[in-house]
Length: 111
Length: 113
Image 1: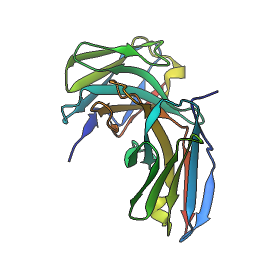
Image 2: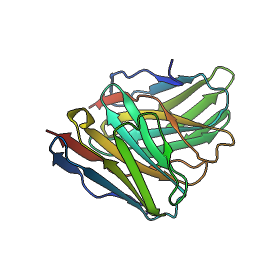
Image 3: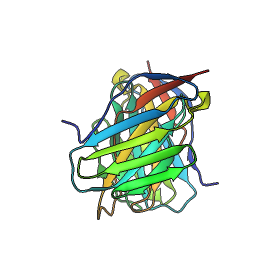
Image 4: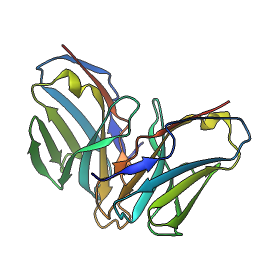
């Protein structure tokens, strides 16, 4: 069974902390994505990557960065966490023109 | 205006009802259309995948695409309480090597026994 694994289901961090969210896929997918999901706003794309060491900004990249050093791993970094970054974070991967496979999500609370 | 519009509901139906979920879109380049189901506190899972216009059926689920009207639908027959979830439509452009999906905001469905 193909999988996208997010390292944490729940995280609580303090304002100003640097936060790392990890995502690993075992399907040899080229593309990987980070979204945040908020009530009433739906899924919003933060960053995506179509190859190792390649990254593209999505619709809301401010306050975030990403790293993709290996094909199977895509990390989201919150440089200095703020309360407005409290959200559900979803990682996904896909082949070209394929549907996404999502992870289970990380619910991040910044206090 | 968002590229993909979806009524957020909530939609509440009795068990056994036929459910109709819909999305409209504005980008005529969209060629790939999907429906995802998301249970509470879980990631979305791919439910239906269709290319271009037409119908696709999978068990109790039927996906329809009408490109002339820029309108897609998901029908659920004989709905069950286990179908209670949020349903998201998604679509992508022809020729997009990145395969980026554009999502609706999701419709929350409750099927009561």
